[in-house]
Length: 264
Image 1 (spheres, rainbow, N blue to C red):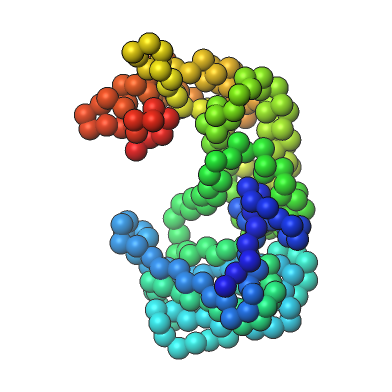
Image 2 (image 1 turned 90 degrees about the vertical axis):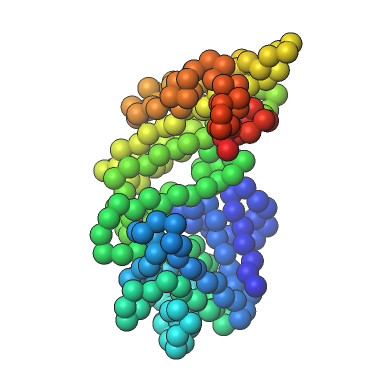
């Protein structure tokens, strides 16, 4: 029972996006539940939950761990990004958070954490070129930077631009430079890596060969990295370079789908 918006959907109410490029607003009696997985031993439980929000009413939310007793927590009003820390009595495997009031806050998500380790915050923007990150307000990013002391920022975009009819990527260089400069100013201590586009094949006669647009986009991405003094890592070269996608598709077992675009 949520209203949501993101940098890759419509946003008629002009809601402010969080660092993930998304925002969710409760409609009333709204809830969300997160559960861990046994896929990795480091993911099987957590000892702290950090909830990020802004523009809250002076009100309370409810939360519970592992289906236990319902507890209350107070939200802080104000436009700034707030971090609410919720702690179970011992290690937990699930948390449920309830927002009883409509439009109670702008909610940006939670981080389930333990005391130590390396944390990777993965913000997936499927079908996106990356330039839409310019829609996130730098002031909002600076608010998040108070809580997130990032050491490394990785930008991995590009494949979705190859689906367009243009092969002039000057606009992409210009817009991604804006994105990089924003993140540099917000996270001055963080290193930045730009991941280059991987191989994408097209049919030529009876064979599948590298789409010529891949080379043009790769050149543009290398320019972006060089001109902005950030690192560049070529996924294209790492997977084998020219015509490598066909080899990945035909490998045993296959390493990519028969659309000759996506890894499996």
